[in-house]
Length: 267
Figure 1: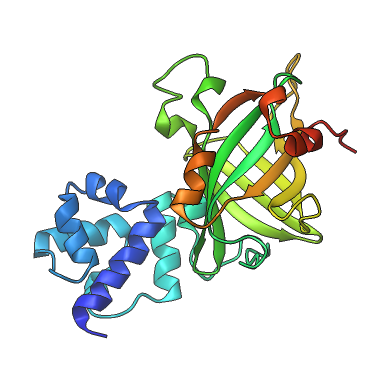
Figure 2: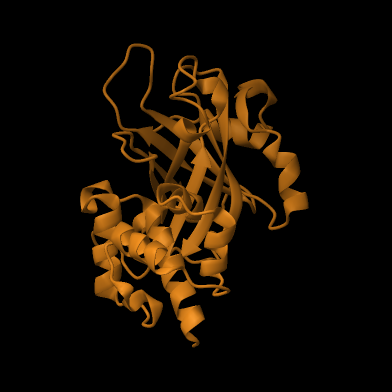
């Protein structure tokens, strides 16, 4: 592999630890177009820029010429995220499982792509919430990312704008299905989980399960609700009709087979 490609690949891995390329470019005040040239091996940074990159990621100038080792990635992750307690799904080393969790849910069961999660509203029994979720494989880790629907938030738009609504996490194997574990953008004390049965016995595209929200009790609010995971077609043309369904919907307009599952008792 050429030196330019080695450096570009190293920088791509390091940028992934931060979460996204735009965040890195913004943090160290580099033009995004120029940063993309570094990532693609089309150019090298000047010494001052290289110094900024090394200090930002906690690495040395060997990233110019040598592929990153596992130890360097782990050190950079801790440096960027402030330590392991503030890791997000996008800051996990590519060959690492979290606390022994198996993140290798097979593609045959849950393919990468855009899918839907339907669940009962946590605040009432008459509405359903529909979220679009992206499942993406990063190394050996299955990650997930999505946005809470805007109508579920009634107040401060500075807190509940696009960034405030974003959540991300991991997909893990369960003994008889798969689970999602996700949180809001760091730093956050928000944690949600979902479990779905491993067999699509409610149709070729549906997994059945439940969603939980980790928080204290609130009058009139539930913390566990029925949920359905719906696999969407792999093409954008197939996804677009479903993308328009995102939001809060009355149960009587939810597809009947999904509404019936959402109204089942939880045991």
